[in-house]
Image (cartoon, rainbow, N blue to C red):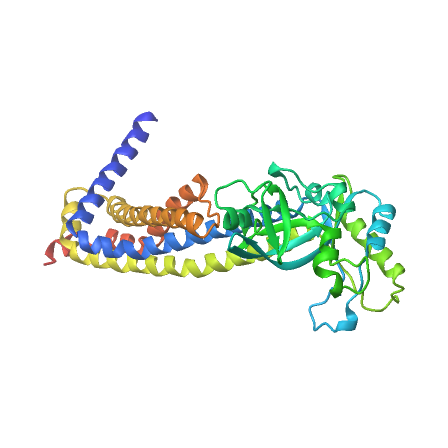
Length: 416
């Protein structure tokens, strides 16, 4: 048994050696033939990696937002045109009612949002300011790398304090620690009390380009004139315990708000309640479809490359007809001739696939470095790319190999 296996291995090693010799003999043609497979493997591998990267970005985005929470927005949940009177109201009284009546609620983080201009010693930048409470950090898993976050005293006194995201801090203060410094927000001086930990970017959205201030300060200094009432909100984050069902919680929040605003049973709900489970499910569906489309388009390159392999192998069979006849005359079996050309096609594709895999890996590193988008190419993807390359060679090299094995030795030797 062991001797038979060794004999088979030695036969295949001989075929690989012959294949490498044939490829070196027509080096330029071999390189041009590999281009199709190389481009195909490069495109498919990169498409799979981009899809995986998109799913990683989704998970990062969900973790940056908060892992077990609901977002309440005073806007109707509809994709059609929205009229001004469709918009609902969301107030601090509603937030307290939700916290009191919905089971499993641990924290609420009411919010007011506005775009502001921040200035330090002639350097200025525009960012999204969030007016909120101390619970915002707990719900969104936001930590501070220096200083502190907002507290109840800041809220009660409407203090002019701000916690900066790392992007804003970098633009205003460079590499210096901003804690304790003064920054002007829309020309009003604020004291920097903390620097948030970096959360990176997701789908081009910089999670660190933000500034957090007490909601009382935001209402008093920046957005009070734009609100319908003295305790109106733009947004509400509701954080739940891990064992809480987000589906049931969403239904309960919607019911409470509709009852509080006396929305008729068949009327359009003027509120949108979305959970992190829904965000995750929807974005995973989108990224999966995106990945399938990318792979389908990229696979066309592999098909073209495979057809190129078949054409070149047919030409090779024609050019080497006399060699085939000589090998048969010396005792080579039809299976030996077939395996020789199959191995040549497989080796050609594996070499092209390896180069394509290396190019995809380099492109993935470049995307991760310059576009801040993760493009993971794991060992499983790499091995799969090489094996798939070999399969392409076997499939498209099959017909030329069978054609070569069916040549008549006498007719082959007569060939010029």
